Image (cartoon, rainbow over all chains, first blue to last red):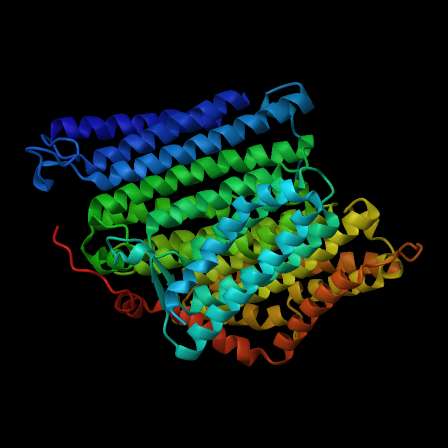
Length: 116
Length: 495
């Protein structure tokens, strides 16, 4: 059980580090990096949920029966989540480029035209 | 006709969206008419589904690739989904026409593509029967919504889009953690099987998981404190996009929230999650109404009003009673009609007169009488004047709130409604009794669309019982989880 909780601990720390960066940092790029770290943490958490100690990767080959593999569904979910994360990051970075062109800064405190 | 054709409701916008580059290569002018045609076909498909579901009284279950759930992903088109798929399709059709008139910024073909994908995302969120599939559709909706918010490429638009993306990113991470916890506890992602197994989950795990799912969806559903993006996005996004945001994107988020909440009602700690949502919803209403009062931009003001109405729907859903959820669904229908009308009207004014500040609305009664009339009817309805549609759903929500023992919430919402009346009447006063101006020519088709929506408001206002009956059936679809489970043909699988 001990090494399982290490994975959970690692995943949750990554999520919290990412959340901290998103909430506290002033630079748009740093916030986006925080968001990516958070997504990585979530993916790690999903993988750990499906992990069963001592079993191998869920590829059915010689000597690996369904009873001896880890749960494949979380891994499929993480693949999807990674693709979605890539799309979001690409979108966010292209918006960051427009922001820099319009305001000449990436500091969120200096780009407040929308208020109230 | 075979029920499996219902998959067209997802397939049609998806295929058409990726067909747009081909259309553009043939002729650039054909893109917008093509968009209009696709949304019209979507109305036909959705209308057929609505008729099937409401005449047979049975939901349509689409099994992707004939894989039986929970192995495969199923689409569940019950009474609620059929009703809202139709609303999404009809509003999209109107919005497609409005886009054809008002979107001048290039590249129009990318706009049409994003438009279809946004419609697809909301449709999928409402139709799906699998919780991870719901996440995927939510992300499709969110990413296209980010892109459409930034479409005008101004500084404001990019700023609003960035704000939306940061909050949306946090929200989707929360949602995914919630999925991880729930999957870890039950070993399934299928909604029906989840409902079966909900009673066995450890109450603490279920509480945390459910609260995370609710928080994740609160970004799309515009609930306090995760709705800071919404007014900015409404102000900066192109006019037709705001119509879609308010009329159905937010509804898809609310529906997903309601569906997940009620599926998990066997969970031991269910009521504490509901109480959390009641508090969030009441705060949403109060904060949004007072923010709306301070606005000088009408589009932003109506955005805040829309947020407060959404808070009211979330309040109704969080009551946890049959009458609450019925009233919430009824309010969703009314809100979709009224806010579509208001945002089309305000967007049309913005397009014709070049701005949406309160000054632009001075003397609108003389400049654009038809639009001013439509906005007036929409405003009166939003305030909740008797004989307009929102009155009936609002009063049912308040009665259900009192019956469920949340008198303090009802009192706060009633107080906030007075504030709502103040700023809407200020707008109406400005339109009819202030300023002067030359008559501006108004588009006949857009006028007809607005008059149609006005007619819907008045018909529901005078004869609420027909739509109320439909809303009750749709509400029962969410509330009656036992029937939901028995409707999905679950395959028995060994662990």
